[in-house]
Amino acid sequence: MKPLSIIIRPWAYVVLMGIGASGTAIAADVDEGSAASALPMHVDPLDEGRASALHRGPNPHATLSAEQHIQVAAQHMAAGRLPQAMAVLSQALAKYPHHAELFNMRAALELKQQDIKGALADMEQAVKLEPDNALYRVTRSRLYLRFERKDEALADLNEAVKLAPKLVPAHFNRGSLLANLGREKEALADFDRCIGIAPELPAPWFNRGSMHWALGEKAKARADINHFIDLAKEPSWKQAGKDLLKVWDQEEAKQQAGPGGNPS
Figure 1 (cartoon, rainbow, N blue to C red):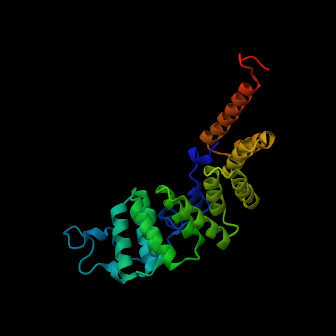
Figure 2: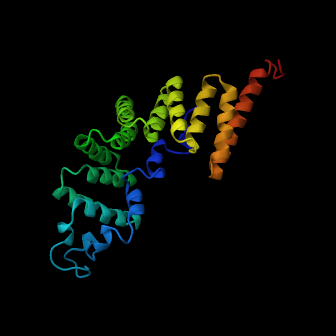
Figure 3: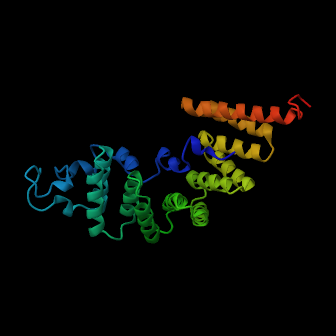
């Protein structure tokens, strides 16, 4: 049984836990009292020179700090203005080519636009600039996986775990990858660690249950899936847990049946 890819992408914890640097996470942190409220009255960075532009003269974004560029880009992303967000980030990187978070945020935008190659290139730069940033390594690892570069993805996740031993996304993603590599016992250890750090999160319980089942520990597997169902809030997640239990019931029934289909 593979890990919870049908229910939740492993890396989604970066957003769910509020520790990521994607546009969604940053936008949620911007309020009226932040520096964003002091930004120039300017909506569209692609409007410069047009008659419809809200400003005249040089692009006011040129005077912004890297952090202010990030806030402006986040506002565009939150409003669905992806080309404008990309323009802001590209302008910022031209001025601040050594700012890792700008590369990280642009990679998130490129990923949203299905530009996997561009996202990986930007995350390579982000990790190069901040090699001790565990979250950047988690993000780069999932991009490596898009290209089936599993060894490099695992190396990034191993390093992320060393850098941040309590970082749930690092353990969860590594466990998911190890499970797909057939290394169930090692994967089980990572899911154990996730549950030890954040027992309220449902997904690790599902994956740990799957590992217990793969290792023949059926009672533990069922207990984990039942706990997952109790924790899960999304109806589709609960149903996935129930469906998995049914599959296991069917597997056991077949094992108990004789060659003619009768119980042995």
